[in-house]
Image (cartoon, rainbow, N blue to C red; front, side, top):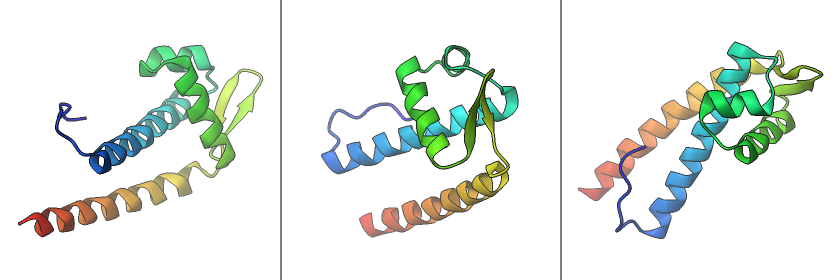
Length: 106
């Protein structure tokens, strides 16, 4: 993320926090995909995120059916490919939305 701006408004702060959350979920998902089965402690070490944040991301991804717990740690489900495609499309949409918002500032 870019350097923090002390003069940000609450609306930009909310947007940044949501993007940071999405980024963390994506980091956790990528790590589970590449290294699963994997547990919370190892995920925390590999991503540099605190364990409580990893737990939240795992619960979110599990609720969405993208990962499942196993006796040896989290693993991805067959839904991973669909999810990654959807994420890529959504990020493309975000890019266009950001470009449109920037045009409105001029």
